[in-house]
Amino acid sequence: MIVRRSEIVGYWDDDGTIICTECAGDSWDDATVEQIITIKHLEKADSNDEDYYCDECKRKLPVSPEKEEKEEVKRRWWVNLGAWDTDSGDEETDKLSKAVGKRIESEIEGVEYSTGDSAGLVFKTWDRAEAEAVREKAMHIMKEVWPECGLPEESFDITAQPQCPKCDALAKFSARFCDNCGSALI
Picture: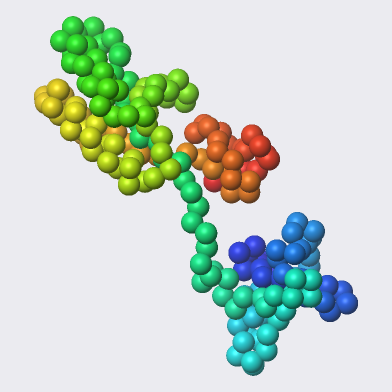
């Protein structure tokens, strides 16, 4: 039988004591199916007016853990504003491109040049709404300075920086594993 980790709410020890997942930590990674307490166990117990309590922290095991309010995960958003200092070989195109880049840098506070995974102007924020507003302003600047440029709105994309699901450390966009704890990034 396969049991998803998200369905596990606790464990029965060999002597019958109950341990919640928070108190158990990683020490129960090798638990047998008979030792695992799942959401289904709690639903069945709830229908019989029974409750399960952790013998360590004395808290009642939740009936539906997925319905509990979860703390919102803070995400770091990047607005990729493009590389405007490229040399296309066309003098007029290069002039307009550089003008767009200079206006974006001067009118949007916090814009910086990134040399990481993809070089260009970026804006970083923890607020998704602010990221949307910066993208809109950059589009407005580009259309104002270079109306016939014709770049679609998707040219300024908003991306959430990868974050480790285990330790919450931020990672490079190209990373597959956390530099901090080694966990696989989703």
